[in-house]
Image (tube, rainbow, N blue to C red):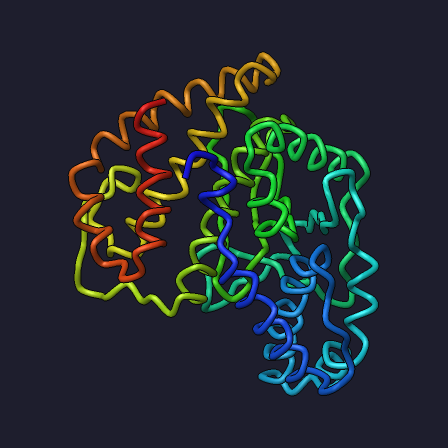
Length: 303
């Protein structure tokens, strides 16, 4: 595979996402939905899981009004949040810190789309569009379009501050990230979290389970990590390196400095993980997926 887009093009993921979307909507409102088009699938997939998450929370709290909203009303209401941008449909939101929730499924406060959700401001929506413009130049635009269909901007930080970004398995195709106001830097973090979502979907679609019990030293965390987390890092960070290397010529001066520093630091991290990576990769049973993960890692090593 010579093209990064080809490396990340896995038809099994699309089949898996269609099946999961259909199953979720059948559970919420049996027989009351039409299959999404190819273009609509990423947002439909994300929205179905937000509805499931919201419905489950409402059911636990015996909140029948909200439960009924997620089951019968949420579909068309949440669909109005979809922004038909120049790089495809997506939802961009920017909830306040008070609106974020703490739950058992994430170490970090996260957000579930609900009755009170509103879209982000025009300036933040445009920032996301500009980030996609940078991503499109790297061949990673389909990765981010499909796996960052809902972008939750969790706060603005200074360039010298640590940026938080994360994804959770219960809300696939959704990314949570801080931003600095620089589109090129935001693009890096969208690539990173979209990569985590891609790998989660790939493992689920191929029914490939990384066994527990094996740990490897993670230079990103500075500690031993289970193979699952180690492999996620060995996939997501190399993709951000590929993005950063290709984006440097078009980045603003502040963005260029951030991405150049990121690239420098990640070279050292990859070098520290290089010996353990092949051993961890042996735990992936699907040959094709192993080859894809290895291809991404090796590309980043020679940047």
